[in-house]
Amino acid sequence: MDEAAFRNYLKKGGRSTSSENRCIRFLSGFEDFLIKKRSGKNLENADSKDLVAFVLMVEEDLKTEAKGYLRAIRYY
Picture: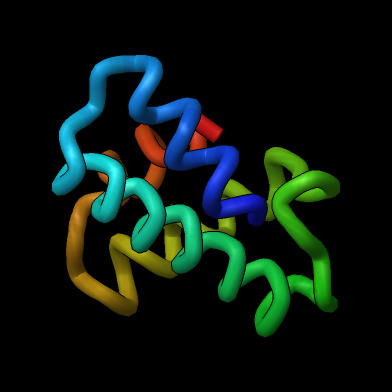
């Protein structure tokens, strides 16, 4: 992930610093998942199957809602 470019995009969209930080954290979580659990994939070549697997992992293993992660992924 190009963090600087993503932060710039979020700022242009009027996001607060705390929102930027949250989006970076959530997107980094998805990126880590892709690298570790999906055979070294990255954000640019992830597909819908990767996204479904990630949502299931977040909601089952981390016992949290995936909506924050999905919002950050959508912004990216």
